[in-house]
Amino acid sequence: MTLAGRRVVLGVSGGIACYKACTIARRLTEMRVAVDVVLTRAAAEFVGPITFEALTHRPVLTSLWQRGAALAHVESGQNADLIILAPATANLIARAAQGIADDVLSALLMARTAPVLIAPAMNDEMFAHTATKQNLQVLRDGGWAIVGPDIGPLAEGASDRPGRMSEPEVIVAEAERMIRGADGKWRGKHVTVTAGPTREAIDPVRVITNRSSGRMGFALAEAAYARGADVTLIAGPTALPLPHGVKAIVVDATSELEEAVRNALPDTDVLIMAAAPADFRPTLRAGSKLPRGEGALEITLEPTADVLQATRDKRKQGSLSIGFALETSDGVRHAREKLDRKALDMIVLNMANEPGAGFEVETNAVTIVTASNTTSIPQMPKREVADRLLEAAEELF
Ligand code: CTP
Image (cartoon, rainbow, N blue to C red; front, side):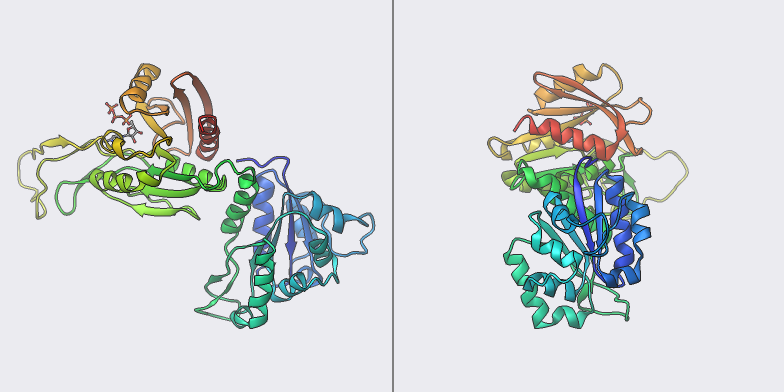
């Protein structure tokens, strides 16, 4: 999920949330973004420029009078892919809205041509103030994007009103969506991703399930959101936190997954079936917990629905359907057979016996099979595999 070659200005104004701006700088740098940090004087009181310089490996701008950076306040905001203001105090928001350019950051904002993402952070009274509301409206009308603020503890104590800056992960996710989504390829596209296992009840406390962790599907949902799509994630039981920005529907049994997919399909432009539905369920579900007893317990299983097959008639015309295939031998042949049988545009082949691929691991190694092509993707983190899969899907639009 590299954003190599992209440039971001991170404008930091003076509030206690400055310490979280360090995480934003670090995370973007890890994504190979060139991050130019610009501090107001108040921000530098909270976190010094050396901290940001060490995190970004780049000089930090703190003043209009900095030697060697005479034009930086103009050039940085014109050459960047995005300007992030985090934290944005009431004072910075007011100066930006009113066109006051009395320090390096506010001057940069007046001269900028790059898009801006604002992450307000302030006391709840300050955020509720009419002046702040009006100033934010001016900026919103000018096309600036706003993330947060959240409701949550403020430096001065608990609050049930917004003021707290959004978490760094959320700000980075929104920033990535603005940068990657700028090409418009996924904008307005409805992507439905299914993820994780399903489970079938034996009795009120016991289930049959499989080892799917949900990671591949969650990574796909995250990656599709980052490209600008509207994402619905239909997830079976997993231990993973729901990704930011997606509409999540949590299901349990294969029949619930089937119903959720059926409901989503008429609006879905791209369906990605990364879930590992349980293929069998007990013929009878005991109403109360089965006693241990003495001898063996026999459970008769019946097949569940093949969700892809059963919901085929609900697919929107012109939409793309992508499936996964988990195989142990003769993978490409079986995958191609599933591509036809399930009427898919693309199938992602996982070999179950390959180390570092498939269930319960952070990485994957897959082969993309379409009607005309077979492409191998070597082992890499699941989020990177997700990006490769979406790039391959783009070619089928
Ligand atoms: N799938 C589905 N409904 C099921 C089982 C699987 O829609 N009940 C979907 C999976 O989400 C995946 C694709 O079908 O996208 C292929 O899954 P896989 O388990 O490889 O294939 P099966 O159809 O279960 O076939 P088999 O077990 O015979 O390999």
